[in-house]
Length: 190
Image 1 (cartoon, rainbow, N blue to C red):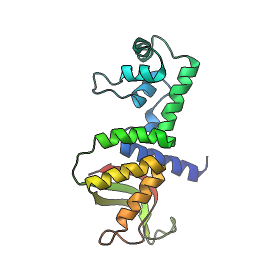
Image 2: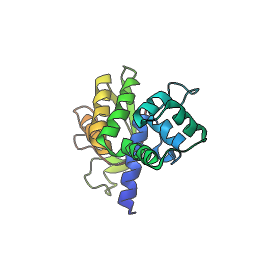
Image 3: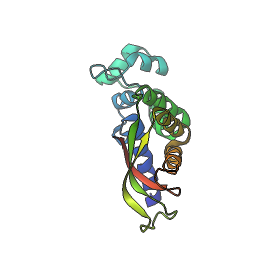
Image 4: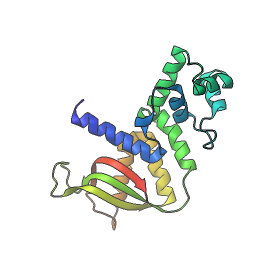
C-alpha cells in the first residue's frame, strides 16, 4: 500500500473515531466485536443490544447471545453480512448515516471547541511547510454547526467533514480565507 493510501485510511479512521468514539482498527473479526460495534447497548452491563441485532440479522435473540458467549458461531453468510456491515459503517454513506444518528443524539446542545491535529495551513501545497504546519488548531462550533459538521461527515465521509470545517475556518474573523487541511491524524472536542 502506498503512503497516500495509508494516510487516507489513517485520516478516515481518525475522523470516524472522532464522530463515533470508536476506534475502527480495534474491531476484530469475532462476532462479539462486530456486534458491539454495530449494535451498542445502553450500558456497560449490556454492551450489545441483542434484541436489535437479532431483528436486523434475522435470527433469535438467544442465537446472538450464544455468539457473544462463544458457544456457537454465525453461519458463513451471516458472518459475511456482519463483516460487510461493519466495514460499511466507515466506507458507505448509509453506514455513516447510522453512526451520525447516534453521534447527533449525544450532542450536548452548547458551543464546543473542536481541535484538529494534522498538516494544515494556508498553502495549497501540502509539502510547503513554510505556510503549513503539522500541529493543532481549534475552532468553536455552535450546536447548529456541530449538527452540520456531523451531516457533512455522513454525506461525504472524512473529506466532506473536512470541507465543511474548512469553510468554518475560512469565515471572516476566524483563521484565514485560504486555510486548508492536508491530512488529519486526530480530532477531539475540548
